[in-house]
View 1 (cartoon, one colour):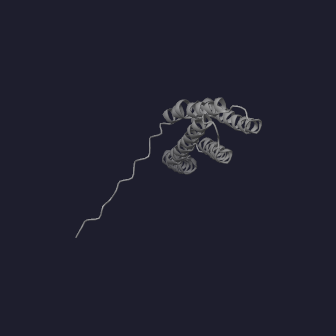
View 2 (tube, rainbow, N blue to C red):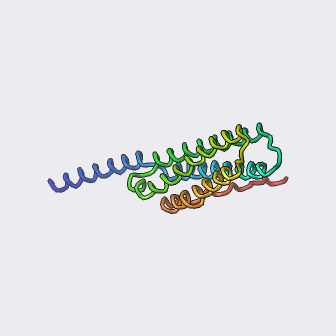
View 3 (cartoon, rainbow, N blue to C red):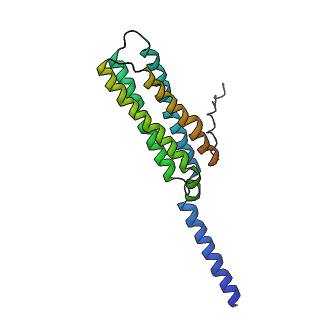
Length: 172
């Protein structure tokens, strides 16, 4: 009888602990969501960098348009930083250790982008060449996405979201 009551007690504690762990463990779909947003924000930034790099080769640059594009890059990089924070918050402790270096690398790349943006703004006022800084922005963003973020997705075993399926109603 005593063994049976110990067994039932251990079983109940295990069930309660299991439900508590499941209810407090981060959701892989949430991490996948923030990872996808990170990719989206980095891709928007790199595409904008390509546009302004092409413009920097022109003899005359529309400074208002250039400033607008720099603002968009900066905003997307800020969003990417928020996505990284959300990934960190929602990742299990043991997995955090394995992706920590890659998160730090992405942070370093994005910090370099902020520095380049400020340097570009300073050089625009002085009418100096900015194309090398724009190419560095592009390089830093691509490196963050194609090397470090890709490793994070591999380590966390994040799959891509399924593409939406078009459902066409039957014709009557």
